[in-house]
Image (cartoon, rainbow, N blue to C red):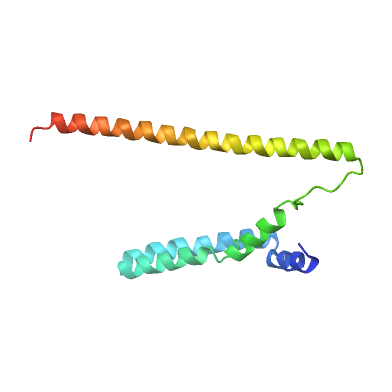
Length: 143
């Protein structure tokens, strides 16, 4: 991530102080809940629309963030992983590390395949059980 991208992400994540966030949430809640209750009592369906609008506005409060802010936060928190590890300067260690990484990747691939086969077998057994129960229920019910 470049310096400009990091600065843009940090600007997106700029939040008001915690005290302001808390006061905003408490104030909004103290306003929105009674207004929603009174509006639903007095105006019926229009009150429901007002309550839905106030609930939608809840997500727009200071500090609650938007999807754009959430994506920027996740991007900042992701570890920066290089595709190929840098050389340590020791050729035999680099060869050992590469061999170990390749072996681990192969084992992970094999394990993923095993998990897929296990899930498929479980799904098949559950489906077979469903068919047996359905057939029993069909036989028990007189036509």
